[in-house]
Length: 449
Image (cartoon, rainbow, N blue to C red; front, top):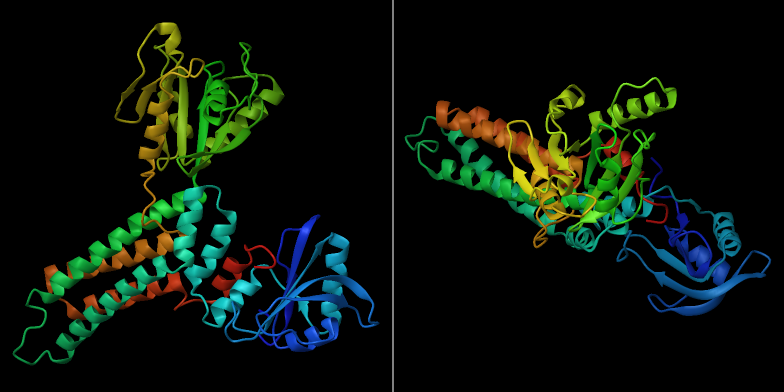
């Protein structure tokens, strides 16, 4: 990891031609770079029109320069923004001149990393910057903004404070075990612990919704040839993504579409029809289909309603036990059935017609229900898989501690479980972290953030 003494530079706007490009510089050399390239020091926080000069006093570009003196900046350091013309060649010349004045190119996410390391943002807020940039729907953007504004972190801090209070109470009981006062015998610890677990569950529920808004789910469409898989893909995506014919085996490769379902990203994968084939190209398509089935979050097994004798369970050996399954009985327009939803022991069965667009609302609503998603985004904040893992570990530890209290009144074991739960929650905001974790998180950011 580079040290914070380095001055860093990067383009902060997307690459390519455009009206304006912003070059961002952060670090101790900012005043020197400003003096060298602008020939005067801008008034702090006031936009100044200027040419941007090289060492030979030749203008490279002209535009607006804004100087933000630290520590009251996004990174906690002196920051200079040069807003010039968005020609890749011009921006490159400006950045090369900044490098000649002692800066180095920023790594992906390094500006956000410095915000975290200089206590301008906690880790959850820093991650929310990338989530806001990458938001694929209005709901996802709102949840990311809530996290960036600190809503997720505030709830975590409140819960941590409750755990600290519990730890103090329990550890007092351990320290004064010989006193007549039975700290663990009264209901205060049990009541406060139950309330803390309930608060953690509420946070976990909201975080799960935020994770779905951020990442969505992978939905794989599978089944035999000619049952209407490609028609279903086209119906869900709202366009002719796949070729639809009466010839079996039309789909030879994996087709992918990304749509949003009430704000939740849905990564739809259409696969080749599953059957025995001597065609090597079709065999490869079937192999890829089985590989996608194994990785699916949700599997749509499409069957033909005109052949009710066919058993969808023959596909079950390819399906992970963790994968949710929905059986779609397609082509009910040919059997003159009404659209329906029938819960089953292994899977829910939905009767519909992709060709006539009948019963699609039943399917869409059940997809959302299958993953626990609801469209009401109030109070939801952006969350990542690592956040959910930390929350799950903390909940397991607190439930374990609750069992120790109820069954054995083992204060020492409860205290240790609470300590570890606090540590797990601290990983979310970065109170406890490793350099390896920071490297993985910030390397996924775009350059200039």
